[in-house]
Image 1 (cartoon, rainbow, N blue to C red):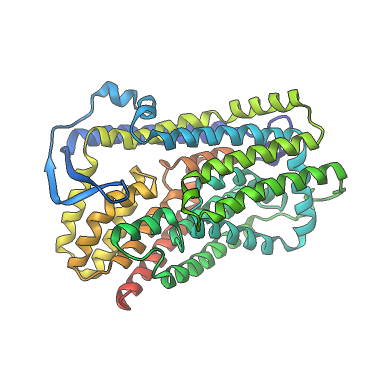
Image 2: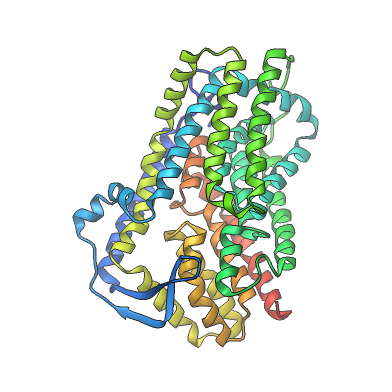
Length: 470
């Protein structure tokens, strides 16, 4: 992504052709590999029961049984379309609608010049202390992930942070890392994450958000590692801020009013999302809240900038069309889970993994639980869905080895969160990379060292928890 792409009124917000083709190629290979897997792995299933809250969880007492399964070739071929009618597709449809709203409004904001104006103001004010600003931005996004479980909801802000990164003399990788990667790291640390830690602790019979001290320690260590990694890279590739970033910025009263409206309305939406950490009724609607407030903030700001209704509609439609290729990526990535569920092999894979733990020493079992969740997250990006599938199995298994349920929950949170910003099956990652015009291959080559270092750090945290009886 070059700077003109994010700030040019002619282009608006579009998925880069190179990043789109790379992502499609990677996902297609994974789709084929998944289909081949269903031909060799026998079908089977665990029994399911409904808990007191109406959620479907595994029935460990009924055990595992092999069944008739498999998926016809035609059904696999059409799986990116059929997934829209599968059970639980409401979330998928909501993500697509959310994405189209972002694309339309962001392009309108770009066309009316407000994005350029806001970025110019930030660059002018923070150009001399850009690394301090970087640290604050990363802390903000990590806190959103850790405290309220935001992830997909942060996608609208990713292009803005990427554009700011370019203005401050860095590249798109720094912008994606400071926003989405930081959010994923916070999501995994999960201090009060209701979608992973909250659900998992409830299923494990633990008090909600208990045992927070080790998660807080994890948050601090992960933040330090992430900032160091991004800081060293940014220092290596930085260019002088004076290269057009914030130079000649002149305050415009009309733009100031539009900026105030945009920030106020969007800030109200973020406040509502933050309150979802304390108001359970809001947790299922955070994506809707962000979409509606982003829409309201964008429309009001564009009108205050002097943009007419017809121009706003044309720009929004252009943005929707520009971002539509991301819908194809999302449907193809979602079809991988659909294929495994239709072929009834997910439970078989899980059954084999749990059985493999019987011969391991205790410290290996802790790390093996981490690995199980990491593998499951490739196929099932939803943290809550994985909790209902895995926690009823791994907590009883771990208790046999004297491993606490609390440590199981921490292993689950680690395994669920970090790989969200690594696996090409995660829709939010694909969308963000597409908007930043960063190919998946480039992203993987850039962040694998951080992921490896973070894997070592979090594994050490789990072993520390085992040693101190957490």
